[in-house]
Image 1 (cartoon, rainbow, N blue to C red):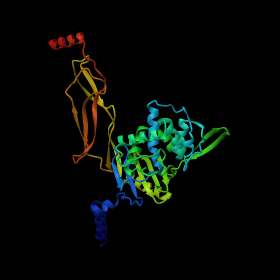
Image 2 (image 1 turned 135 degrees about the vertical axis):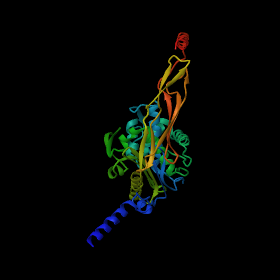
Image 3 (image 1 turned 180 degrees about the horizontal axis):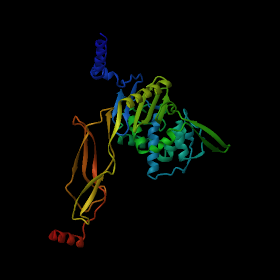
Image 4 (image 1 turned 30 degrees about the vertical axis):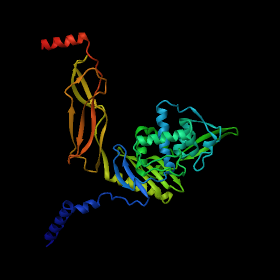
Length: 391
């Protein structure tokens, strides 16, 4: 009798371990979160893939999340050489008059571009945002035109900017998906913004006719204290917008962007962003398929000063997969038979396409020439002809 009971116990254990019904297996996965905010989206940064969305295309007042575009344009213009970080910016009467979140800049006060940018990113300072907008765009209106032009370039079709800081203004709107797009553009092209977005406290020094005074800055994004892997990015709240947040976090090489719009209170926006981030990190992972610059062999060069040219991949390739589902990805290389000189380094010579096991595309990258090759001169052409005759 004892042996029969033991046999039945082992059998039941075997059935439980190896024949769990499909719906029971699904219950072990991270559940899709319930979000009470009016609009939300979760995006994976490297691929731009949407992992969750709720009313993500609805235009809503974005409050200070607007400043993500302001910050993006600041970094882009600095990179383009339009100004240096140590350039001094004179605060106008208009900039100093901004209400809401501010660092109390005075008219005529001078601060460096880097200090003002720090105030915008860490403390969400409206006065600093407008001061930088005027510095770059000539006026706030000129800068706002730049913001809207850049939004169109990014495909932000639910966005209209009226000001540079996000104070409530009729017609000033964006959507959760659009905010994720500009957030992705900022963090992927300017990862150095993390130096500010992950800073909890800092200071600036006001230098005015009254003398020098130190002013404290505290990060408005509490997630950098509360959430493991948090990297940023921007909070916002006004009477019309309620409570908004674009939250970024990175774990195990995967960076996520969680956008919450029109949450009912300050706590809710952070809690719901954490729900989205937990869902993303618990359900997905990024699989590296190819490194930028990987060797792809060589091909002949026609009419060139070199007989062959080395090939390499043009970019990294990553694929977003559900956890545990990253096996079975295959690659197909399509390489040109030859390249005709002259051509520059980086000239396309084919591509690699990656496929999931179901045949859908997982990613792709160009195969490019590692070096440029000039057109062969008379002596090189003669040598090439002689080689053909000899060999």
